[in-house]
Amino acid sequence: MGVSIVSTGSYVPDRVLKNTDLEKMVETSDEWITTRTGIKERRISEGETTSDMATEAVLRALNGKSSPEDVELIVVATATPDAFFPSTACKVQSKIENKGAVVFDISAACSGFIYALYVADSIMRSKNVKKAVVVGAERFSKIVNWKDRTTCILFGDGAGAVLLEHSDNEGVLGFDIGADGSYGELLAVPSVGSNEEYPFYVRMKGNEVFKIAVRTMVDSIGRVLEKTGLKADDISLLIPHQANIRIINAVAERVGIPKEKVFVNLDRYGNTSAASIPIALDEAVREGKVKSGDLVLMTAFGGGFTWGSCIVRL
Ligand code: COA
Image (cartoon, rainbow, N blue to C red; front, side, top):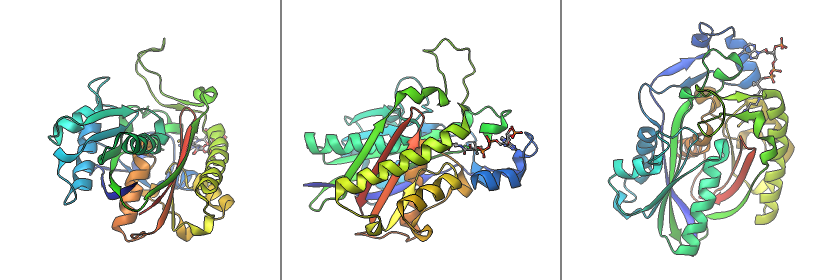
């Protein structure tokens, strides 16, 4: 018995915020943002909540593949839940009209989707759960300080989802996953359990995060390749967390995966945190960049610091 990704779905809000729009909001330029990050525009919710976006992504993933009531497990990775409780997963469950599934949220910042995949895969194997939905969904525009040019240019909103099922052939081949909490202060959003005053915004030491992100993803990719007995050449497509094109290029170069095999959509969406990998995976599938049988390597890095890499055969 194996576990496989059988379908994908994603949703981004209609509203586009371009770099040239940001020029009117903070002291920045399209040229600076493009050369330092690769981002040209991002999507911003016009009232859609995180669970609204997650629900739409889930329904698109389920479309024609499974009815919502057959789903036994829903895991939502998010750093921007609609509420402290009920969980975003409970809200999604209610909106897709499922009852009785095991549902919960996971907090692992930008690595959240890989963490959620890891947990769902483990539960499916150990508890004989046959159908699960794993989602990454974020409304980062709500926790960005729109007066801080060092962070507000980076993030966007959106959601992506996958449907996982038991399969005869193995689809989810292996993980490398971990965290180092000693780096917590370099990339953080405080909340009500802290002694900090509301409002709570993203704060980041971008330069330091950058260097550790590259190193950590390169090491994580090395470990997941070793664990699965695969080589960089075997990978059909690398789907890295979409934070910064310079990070992506540095990682791909160091692990020896050519640019043609690296999926990039951050120019259109910016960093959508836990949603970035599942949105990219869905687009790669829809654009025909990957097909059945291909090996896809996903790698993420985020606040915590957390990291995670996973290799799947589609
Ligand atoms: N527009 C124009 N200038 C800006 C700017 C903006 N939006 N933001 C910062 N600057 C300025 C800085 O103030 C600094 O000016 P100074 O030299 O006069 O002090 C200069 O640009 C360089 O800043 P620096 O932070 O060193 O730039 P950088 O090349 O490291 O790029 C990031 C900044 C944030 C794009 C980059 O560090 C990054 O992407 N880090 C990782 C972020 C990330 O991926 N986070 C999520 C991980 S999950």
